[in-house]
Image (cartoon, rainbow, N blue to C red; front, side, top):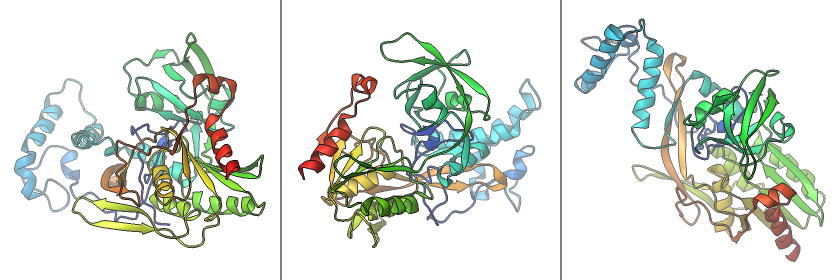
Length: 424
């Protein structure tokens, strides 16, 4: 399947990032990306500027036939190569790691764009990002996390994961890792410190509302990111929770709906809370299970061109009354699905305003296995041409979950969804 990434993986937004071994969805977290993340429907070409020869030594005076600075950019890049040469000649600790210098240069270039969703992924990060949406196993504690806050923050432990078994809860802040204070440490760096081989133990110091900080030891494990959970609730309400929009999500959802619809439910709840996104193609597959026909999103490029996406035929739940659960962790592909269902009056949104990521990212692999660049290539709009970036989707019924609700194991958002479907 040709999939286009839409969410971000590294230090994204409420980067739904996964504390799983080699990566994270963000790298769960999160995800309309080809996040994870890859492998797109846009044409993917190697980067055109690859100064491979120069990286092995100093800047050449003229561009070589293969690689090097293109002739029309040589004047512009003179200061860069001058700096490169100075570091290689005069830096006190020689020899310098030219691979790290190259990666840092790419990272700095993309950071200069000021777009939090455009970034550089080194080879290991790129591998992890791809693995997450491809359904491969990771090694870590199994939790979606937010890397954008002052401390790495748990969004949600994965069902049955080491994080869940250790008692980690949403909004737990990791203030130290193996005794190392994380004050001032970026969320992505902290996340990398939590990852590690299966069977090893990591000691996390947790700050939880209303409590003194405490330590939790978590044994890392090989983790396969769950695609979805489905079941019948009391009152003949079908329930489906999507955890990501990966390679297998579409087929898995179709099979789950076959089983649920055979039980003749009176209503259906689609839970997209803390789902940071994934493949664009998968988002269209998912929304098409619930929308019979019509435009489900627009993709708008910088030159004004746009692509219109319509529902695909064959959906199994296009008539049943439905409610979609959303919250601040619902992003990207989740917002594509929720926005289409809301605009097309197909169902109600219940919860709190979504994250607000309305842009499309494309992963472009770099030559020589140097990783990849994730670049924002387009914005997407809902069927009513609403812009989501920085705004999010406002639910039809706003329902919050308090810390007291979490502590008591209550879910007023789910209760409201059941109430609406029961009334219908």
